Image 1: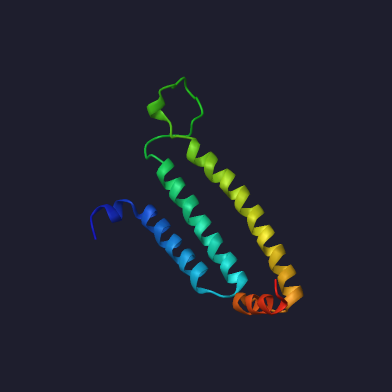
Image 2: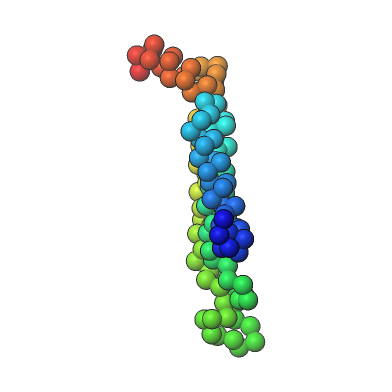
Length: 124
């Protein structure tokens, strides 16, 4: 491990969370667990963006005390992207959960392999 791992621990945690979410998405057959994996991946991306947007020693981009130098403030774009991403993620999660409920009501299972097998039997 290099010396940068301990300096950039936030990015390392974000990448670890992303790998955990991605593995969960690939290896689980339960639809609820897949949705949880996707949400973990979303959170990892938001953490990564927040880590990249923060610069130590700088403050939020609100002009106070007449300081107008760009070097005194952090970049507000990553925070805006994270906020937008969270809103989209909540909407997508709600849609996925509602579709999962409909699938459960129709097939009485959350196992993706079982649902796929039943779909093939129905000829869809």
